[in-house]
Length: 291
Image (cartoon, rainbow, N blue to C red; front, top):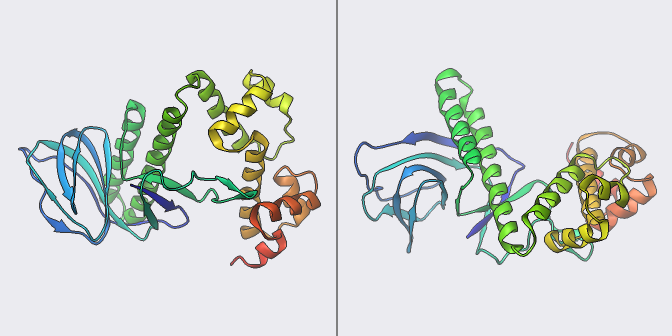
């Protein structure tokens, strides 16, 4: 099970804390009206949600769905963080039955950069990421005593945690699905993707990218397409279009200014590409947004 998560709103976090019982503990039975996120630090948790059973261990992140009865199935020592939250759109679907984020169909980007994929259950292997998640939870817990505005910080920290978990899951899936590609090459693709996300406004050429990554561009482009479902410059255009959407929705910049800001050669080429990827003109898109 995975969830398509909208990142356009902050979650409402009703409760967030750490729980470490002194003895073996069995989760009580309840039907909760909110999502609940668990992050296990130590020990184990044995749960039944609806008709499905789960056994969680250290480093596991698990999401309980609202409206389903869940209960412990047997006692175990445990130490974990949890967050109860709502007001965040999570669309569930069976694993492997939803297209990858940003997948191209008939020339259009199916998703923008305001969504992420979150697994119902995932394991965090990286010590660095485990420490990062622990730090985020601890900062959120400490904020309750330090500030009257802690609910806002809770919301921001939870969103930060969800995004980090999503990114980790995506990277692991990428490695699994492309196990035949050398890990060094996958790392170069990550570097290239990060570079395109930062320098989308620059005039980039294949030779520049080839020099930066230190790999033949044709080979790099083939591997990039194999991993991401699109060529390097298709991806770059997708990034530029999404940045343009942000500017159209939040500023009064003229089309030629947005074109220059996002790396398009002129406003006419920008308009053609925008309509190709979104199905509407940038002017019509801007008029339809609520400022």
